[in-house]
Length: 243
Ligand SMILES: [Zn+2]
Ligand SMILES: [Zn+2]
Image (cartoon, rainbow, N blue to C red; front, side, top):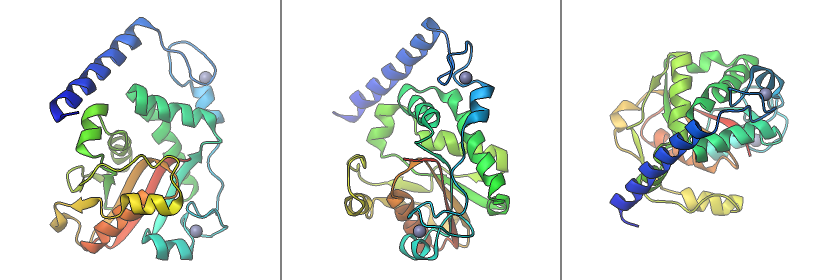
């Protein structure tokens, strides 16, 4: 599909979602309560991910969400993931945000991430940090109409007074969907896909890279690698849920 046509379909999709939302009133995706996509009671029941576990390999670890072995392999210095897909409501919220463009779901989702940051006593990681959402390839961005990681990053940046940067990194080629690929295939799939287009802005910086969902961590690790090559000093990976 050429770019113009993809963009056109992206716009049609956004519009049809808006019309759909007008025709059918909101109800809580957890309990069916009216007038909200996620009520406060359902938000309060959502479980955060277990403490003291490495988010990449699931082994016990102390410190900031990543074990020594995974720090070396991924070059990520810390990891924060608020929950996992066993929390089926969180999965539903993410999918509705991502595929149905229910943007207001970003509030309860980032709320979970904020709770996890508090629990991990990781607020200091955000001091003078830059927040970079995992970019989408232009073609996918045009057909979806938005980048869900960017919407999440914007909400989180506002809460932690971080600087949000959406134009520092570009995804240079459209990757296969990571779903269904093995760990090695995922690594290969994302190898070299990120290009830092404004390297002068990352030198000496602490950077939080953020995505909606974490699977093996291959995408965040690849982004971390590209940023460290350009002189970033510390990279923290963050995601709403572990798949
Ligand atoms: Zn509810
Ligand atoms: Zn690990």
